Image (cartoon, rainbow, N blue to C red; front, side):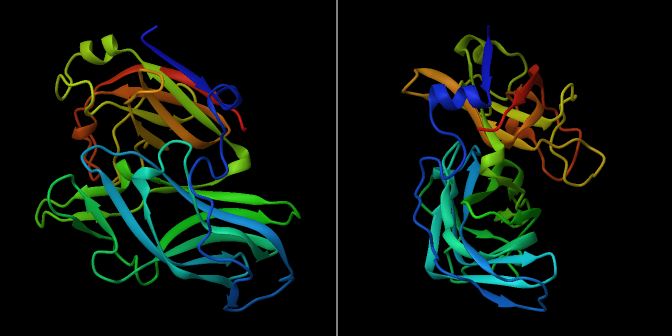
Length: 313
């Protein structure tokens, strides 16, 4: 086979842990109870054990994407905000959190019981605390509209009702989030994220043969280490398309990931973690550099389109 994959629980047993905090740091930036703001009603009795982590999907063309967080805010369904200012700003290179790796922003905190529908991540406003390293001599500031004021807005419903621990993971898709603005030449970020309960998610990992990577027609180049990516779409039998944020009619991937050489296995592999259990269509492209986030109809060629099913860990 030119391309093989393992999805869901089997990959956890064979190739390492799934979900949770992965192999990243588990040191949280805040502890204890958050402060409540806004109108509140109903029970606000807190139970310990809530954690919030971040992870990302890799991107070509840069070697670091660093965000510095200063506060986490969670909104209850009744409109009340629960604020967790971090004791010290927490700087995270998202590119170090690929695959099943994640890093905690909140670790085992006390959170009021109830329904929640939004999370906001407030970024540091100091110069060059949020930046991209393109791999040259200079770092480039990352422009994130409202990131330092109202923060990065993550929509998603979840319930905090149990007495046990729970980890929610914010999964950044950097391929869909970062672009180099043509006029200014500056790096811009419009975050594309997923909010996932780690206990209800699984891992998708597979290999692609070198022969396949070097014989696909119409690639952007003939190099095995560049512009090869796997796009993951929700549901079976999806016809893969490029990313188009300008249209709500197009089918955008729920996740993307690069195909990279892994010395441990001496193979080219891809990995998409923290996928909610369910059915997906995966497709390989060797033209990932041609995907313009703001328009459709890019000249991407997709190969080896397959249906997969991911089960929770």
